[in-house]
Length: 115
Image 1 (cartoon, rainbow, N blue to C red):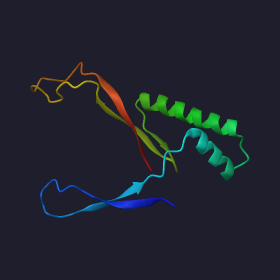
Image 2: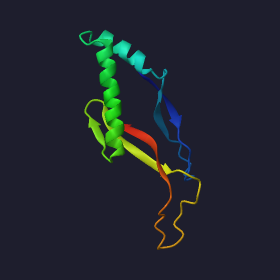
Image 3: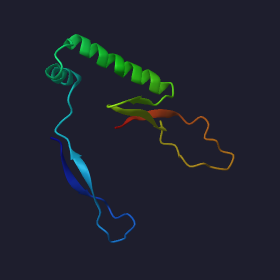
């Protein structure tokens, strides 16, 4: 069973109110190999090599579809999307009304998953 702890939020608006939110306590991150081994205990009708091939294909397709601008919804697993960021430390503020920030290198900063 997953566990959580209550984490206090900083009072950024100086309201004097102490707010908390639940935060997951992560055991550790399972590797792909460990995940596949655990899947074998769940459904033994599919070989480890087939399970691994399917997982690798899903990962490759996610990368391909996300890089083409799609969000991907895999029901029961999550909806995947990209977060973008600037590649360098140049100023990110618009310098004038006409400034379109053209030429600022952008990169994928994260892959998001919502369940």
